[in-house]
Image 1 (cartoon, rainbow, N blue to C red):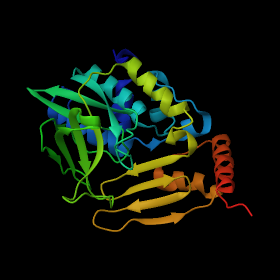
Image 2 (image 1 turned 120 degrees about the vertical axis):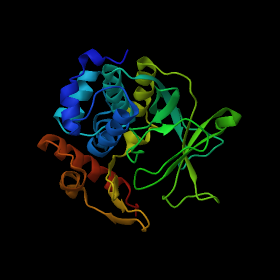
Image 3 (image 1 turned 135 degrees about the horizontal axis):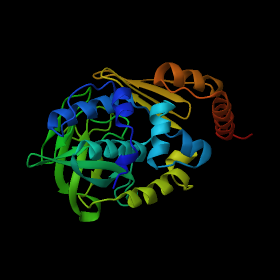
Image 4 (image 1 turned 60 degrees about the vertical axis):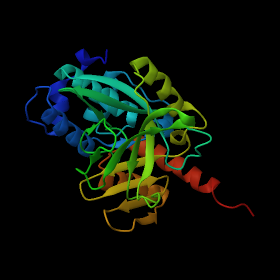
Length: 289
């Protein structure tokens, strides 16, 4: 279903630096998720620059593995799903709604892609496409936590969008915590999704005028010690237990910052296009006199 016959598994695992066992076990899944999140990059450049993001596996492999570019959740998830399918894992794809900064009375579309993996009588949420993603699968039980990365995550079974039952992923560390120290990051149900469903959601994210990924670039890189983001021209670095540090860069500085901090290397034509578009955005944001 996930085009695993088109996946160059050796190239994918080699890119991750993974040399472990390939049996479909929890140990393998944990190692692959950690390696994927820390190795592959996250960016929205194709939707911002071209309004086109291809989800066919050859295109995703070429972009994320051979060209060393980043992608967003749909690209990461279809690649990871193909790898899991080829390795013999059993899983269900699902979609979630990102809640951060959202008005609960006007929910965002369900455009965040994730997987639920069945292993040894348990089900585990695998969320490798958020950018700042958990570094391990989270068992799908109320109150399950992940503390493997620099920031913890919590899973809750609760009422979600407009009173529907479902699951919420909660996080700490972004300054918007609720009274108990946690804030909802995304919500989801266990309704199965298929490649065609992801194609439809991806079309909205990559092309619609209201998609945040169309109107400005957003780049992320997570390590075990820090989380860097570039939101248009605002570069922010977060470290556990410390206040975020931000600075505004100039448009012509963006390609070098992407290479030095985010390990995303643009070819000269794409770098020039990015600088041009960022310059236009900066000019449009200036107050008129």
